[in-house]
Length: 199
Image (cartoon, rainbow, N blue to C red; front, side, top):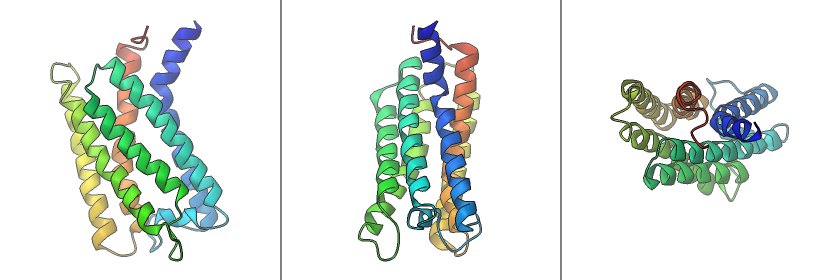
């Protein structure tokens, strides 16, 4: 029973990470008066005294939960190391972004920016690696659609963040939204088809 509960937790760890991250981010955004349409990026929450600890904690805890989920997915779906490599590089970027302030006066602004872009670019790569490893799956069409969703949110998000003004938070959030939809979908499929595959 404990082993089954452990496997279910592993399977659901990604969804828990999504909940932790968005609960923390949305709470911090309310405290800072930051909206999705705003000239300040979400990363501003890491330097605001009212939100910096919550912002960092949310990113750190969710990153570790996502990594836990990555190992579950790799093992359950028998994926190659490339998937795990993309996933771990991206989450390393999230961890670094969590502990390096973004503010104008910060010595770590460049490090934070590189880490955040590393995370963003890792997401379509890892979802692509997952999807095309499942060509013989009955859910392959779903996996391709999830990949297209992430590619769309990535392109639009990076475009908004890089080439427009006043919508920085939305540009930052979009690539993550595609990734989080993928996590939720993979969790649902896993619970329905192989909840105890690690046994």
